[in-house]
Length: 293
Image 1 (tube, one colour):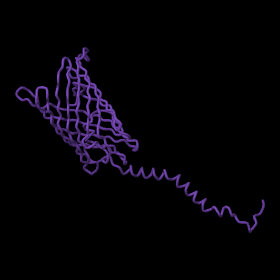
Image 2 (image 1 turned 180 degrees about the vertical axis):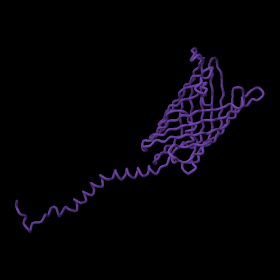
Image 3 (image 1 turned 45 degrees about the vertical axis):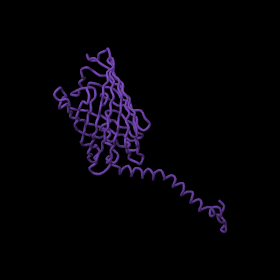
Image 4 (image 1 turned 120 degrees about the horizontal axis):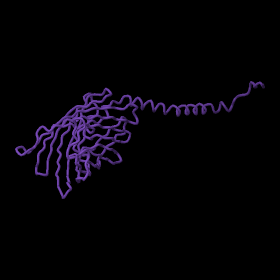
């Protein structure tokens, strides 16, 4: 091993030592940057509460089905319990129905590891009045409560509107025109997402009887199309800053009706079918109980 002369200096290392240190620092910073960003994002997500982004108001009226809005997947089970308190008749033309819907929701997010479950009960009343023999107007109002299963705050849910439906028989067909104008909202008891929506819907349905029976019941088939226009946009909130505002939805449905309602437990189903919602911002497949007017 050769000795190093005392007067010899490492000129190259001395000249580039400051650049070497800078490069090492840059490499370490680049390698740690994703960790820092992920840690910041995780801290931001950890501070998010369910009441900051859950929309109980729309989930209450959307109906049973599977829905997809960008990074959010929503499963909704809505039991549309109701009771006809006053039947319309010859002496009293108008009727009164008690609305007792119970809604369960299951929300999955791509940017949150934990799923969120919700439940809401929003009772109300619907007043039914015939303007003509084939034209009904149905104003309604509902108010109730919602809660998630993750320890969030209680939500107060409310909504009111008016539905209308006109029926036009033609030969063996029955055509219907329907409309709905409503507004709904929510207030979180501990502070949070106190937003709502208002919308206008118009739809058309064609129904025709069939020649086959199902479980001993005569049946008919129908197709319908509904246009939903949100007057002030439907704001779908996300845990981070990537909210979606929906202006318009299209709904296509097909149903089967029975001359004697089907009974599942204590729920009577005069009609049952499938509804499809195509779109860029929101898509979905829902279980429908018929033309919703």
